[in-house]
Amino acid sequence: MTSELQIEQLKALMLSAPESVVTRIIAVVLSVALAAMVLWLVRTRRLREEFTPLWVAASLGLALLSLRFDLLQAITRAIGAWTPSATLFFLGMVFLAVLCLNYAVRLSRAGLQLKNLAQEVALMRHEIQDLRRRGEPGSSTGPLL
Image (cartoon, rainbow, N blue to C red; front, side, top):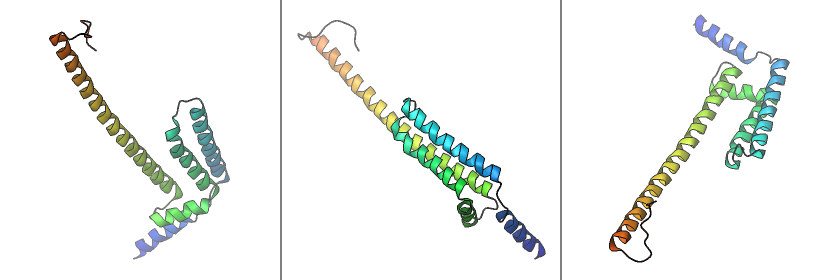
């Protein structure tokens, strides 16, 4: 019973630990830098506009959690984590899982489109060969596609 009490006391101590001002400043600066980098990448056309909302939401979420430490502590308590840093790592892993799922869906769609295009090209080549064999006017003897 005393070990359970000690564990609960340790957890309460971890959750009530004050945040460092330096940590908050670094977190705010990094979240603003992330938002600026996303906007710069979109402006220079290195990041397509369709990905912008995801990255802007991530940077705004980081900024919000940086400015509102009490919100981060509430999320920490809600998910049962011991420290806010563990919560941030958890949220980061969730973000990466969503990002991977997003890319998997896009990759599947692109693979399907590639297969359909390859089938269409094969059918067109077959039609061109049939036209050449028949000797119909308008068919050339040049190389196939």
